[in-house]
Image 1 (cartoon, rainbow, N blue to C red):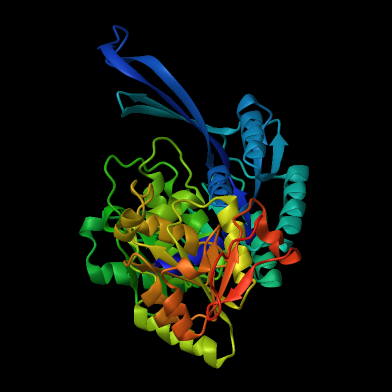
Image 2 (tube, rainbow, N blue to C red):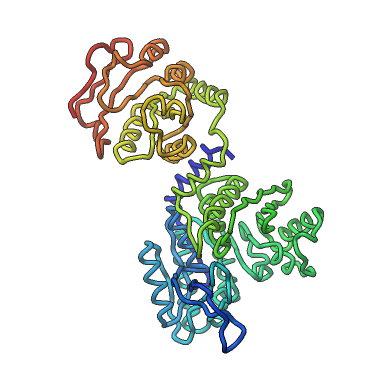
Length: 497
């Protein structure tokens, strides 16, 4: 996995429309301190310190889609109670489209966890396992058909509380055949989806064993050849394109017909909080696949997203910014020098105009984004050089707030940027000689003759363009703009903004 590839996939999350269908849940966490044993029975007396509520189940998957920048919609059923009202309000607050149907005869599924000094004491579950029926089922199927037709991906979050009853699953299969959408199934009862031709199923190893009718064993007691057989038979019997089987602390295995098994390594996290991590994984996987990522890259990105949330307490979500920062810390360089040189040669042969700019980019302001957008309009391909931590420290007294890989990820995630690279020199002269851009863009007030990289730019016959750094500065095309070629740039090259 390269940072460049992963960041560009994350950058496309915002264009993906994801429908989440399944059980809406309210996750509650009551935390406090255990000071004594109750005289009424051998249980601790917990003095309350905090009460937290989060969307759970299908609503947590939708919340993760929205937090990552995707366009989320959630179709589910809630009760006519305070828990259901809170979930609806919370989805609205998070800008998630909701089709939460109200069933007065049903209690909203609620999971209440009691913690004492960080340790679970008990979990209290409320909710009915009753299939949809009558007018409620008919309305649900109508909403499903309308939402399915306009989405890019569908997440099925089936906790077996009755929302995903047989008529709904049959309707999902028919819609899948009609619209050929990406469908990810996360179900505790996978045999119900046999023959639906799901795109991805994401069971843990216990659910996978049950789906095949095996006597369930702990993952540590399963030999490598048994895990291989488990995944292969799962793909065949359920009828899916990919099966992604999670193995707890041993990571995950990705199975695909006629392809070798691919292992996703575990991401160790101290004091992991696993509640909702599967929803995060599935939401990220759906977005990445919908954004065009190969399945292996999508799975690796999803694993990194899950690693972020398990480090948080409660039922958490991960933002696109957090995911990019995580990817920046673990991914290798975006492209080897040779790879970029080959790409630049291909661009030239195709007659494409290469634009280059550089900077520290310690965070991105709206002015910097507008600057990069304007730079891209000067040609066909935009390459951005990022100062390494060492070269950035040589240019200014205070070190960058963000590490070099995080700065690299932020810029790489922008749609207008085609390639990013780190350079360790104090000036980009050597990079310019290697890239040989048609245009070199600088921002702000510069005196062209004083630019240290000007000699290198003259050597390669590039043009120097200086753009003002303005909030909303993309309108520079409609105004007079200073443009001077590198060969003739002398004296004062500044323009009043």
